[in-house]
Picture (cartoon, one colour):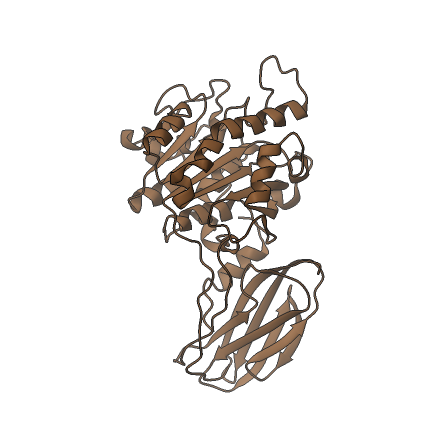
Length: 406
């Protein structure tokens, strides 16, 4: 797993509990949550960076979705080449970076969690030779773009391998109202931006992207416009990796579009730092799953795209020494200066209440609650409040925020 601020945040505190005196009867409100959806979908495209697709006139449909719904502006692939990113989207781990990998994956994965929770799923892979096929490439189908074909739960169980179907089945299931709760959609190499639309490969990159965009409009827009989707649908369209030369955060800066009638506002921009394991957690959370594969257990579920973020502090004291950052909320986007308000519950006197930003102490006292304002430059910042009582016990809480210019 790559080392990121979001991972540290969640490892330190996966729920916000409360910063250092005994406090009772505080008013509370709930955090913004990922809404429950009846159907979630993901379409994975190939090998183009954020700047190559966002605002590109050859991708009018894709950009219309990005402008109408939401997009993550600070999203990075996990690795080069492709295969590790497809595994990150489904297992929360970069299982391998060998595109010729032919083994069986036994790590925890989304299929295991879906089946355990009684949820239905399918992988709709364009040009898949036949239902249940787990073999190697048959051009323009590429196995390395279909992570489900490697999972032991799928390979060893005919009932699960039957969920690997050619993409032609998607329109049939949509028309019949029989789409599963989780759909992983894989265009073939000629339609995902990887290769030219026809062979031999004589085309420009603009031709590839124009064809990719047309494929989305032809095959995915009927889903977006359907009553099923408008009632309870969530769609993620994401690129697997950026250009080879961009190795930022492993796989480069890429575009991820979040499409749903439940997006908090028209054209919402999520500026928090995300990678593929956050999309995995978002889709699992949207279906009500409570256990998340691999490193997806330790990252944001991208809830900032939904509802209105609010803050919460403890209702009453107990015997637990806890720290909460009540404001700002985790994953929020706001401008500087930031108001920071934190509280603690402790049965012992405090000797330190400290605010750290990006690992550097900026404020310290012996009092709680902590209330201050901080000026920060634009970008992602990790805020940590830690408290120490007179017995040496420590507690802390951490949030990740994204600061934008006023």
